[in-house]
Length: 222
Image (cartoon, rainbow, N blue to C red; front, side, top):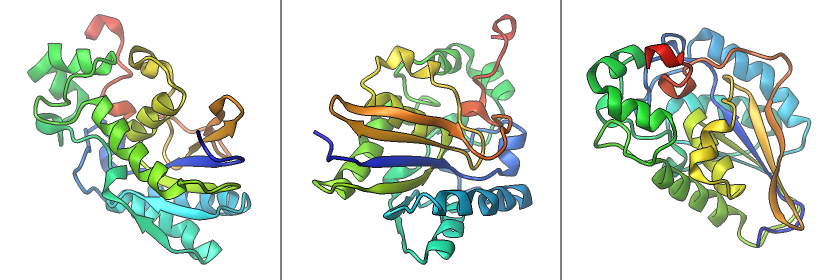
């Protein structure tokens, strides 16, 4: 059972050039662009005002730099864990959603629709992402109480974590809306376990770029 009064703030990294063109990033270490750095700098003081007790981050630079903007304000070390990375996209990494549909339509659409097939044939499944990322968070929390841990991570990983902690059937994880760049969701403990307290929160609503690199696709072009 989760400790009392704990919250997990899942903070998606700021914008990258690959987000804007809908290119599958996965484990590729793509840096924030200037907009992404600005987004992180805008969001960090808001999150700082919530008085986080720890900052965890994916080891990929787009998440680490995002997390560092908060760490600088609250004078707190960022704890880096590669288990908080984005989904390994296998053969899909570096390609746009349109390119992946053209080259691997059936597999790609199955994955977008919420199946547990490995991304890009040799990449990771959603269940694998949820297992590794939740293990990193659970190990840190342990029996701690009254925590607000900020987890700087990625859109796909955040969605897997939300589905996992809410015990949603995997087929329904796709119903969870995407996170815009540098926006966050908050999971909070309750007597019945974890619940979703906020989703895609931030000062100004932003478009969801790179929605798992291809999810926002009209049915007629699938």
